[in-house]
Every structure is written in C-alpha cells, then in structure tokens.
Image 1 (cartoon, rainbow, N blue to C red):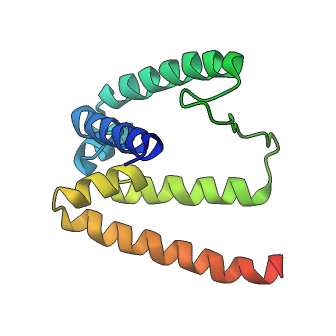
Image 2 (tube, rainbow, N blue to C red):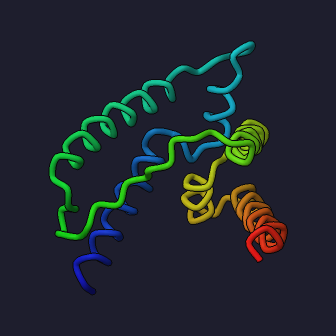
Length: 141
C-alpha cells in the first residue's frame, strides 16, 4: 500500500470514527437536532462548530504551505458563485437530510454497522446520482 492510499485510509477511518462518536451516524440524534420546535438536541451544533473551527485553522495553515503533507499539489475549490443548480442541490440535500436524518458519509458508516435504513438511503442516493448523470449528459454534449 502506497503512502497516499494509507493516508486516505487513515483519514477515512478517523472521519468514520468521528461520525460514530459524535452521533452523526445515528438518524434519531440527527432528527432530534433538526427538531427545533420539539425536543431539540443541540449537541450536534457543538460537533459542527468544532468541525468548522478545525477546518478554518487547517485551511489557513494549508494555504500558507502551498502543498499537501505528502508533497502533492494543493487543490482547493476556486468557485465562488452561487447559481441555481447549487441552490437547488443544497435544498435537495437538506430536505433529504431532514427527512431521513442521514447524509452520505454517515450513511456509509451506518450501512457498515448493518443499519437497513442506511442501506435504503444509500441505494436511493446512488439512484439520484445516476438520474443526475442521465439528465446532465444532454447539457454537456
């Protein structure tokens, strides 16, 4: 295994463990966080706040380096515009998250833990991605 694959494995493992420990792989906890009018559970706000803080510090330091820790080129997103496709995609993601209490990363973690709901979500997510690709082909052709 080369160092890039090992790095990806370790980062994915730490991310998955973080999702489990924080409760983000538990749809009931996520839905309780999203239920502002009911029995709201604010604990995930702390998890998200901590993630934003870590990301802010990390991106600030990485921009100064100019390369990755493994010496590769640094590729950060450059797009800054909000278009209709981004807004609609974000809305679809949010509605799906709110209905299921699952988003893609936690779905894979929960699926690995044997959660049937996560399997159904992942199949639906892949079907949606496939549908997007079918609809997108005429635009790029």
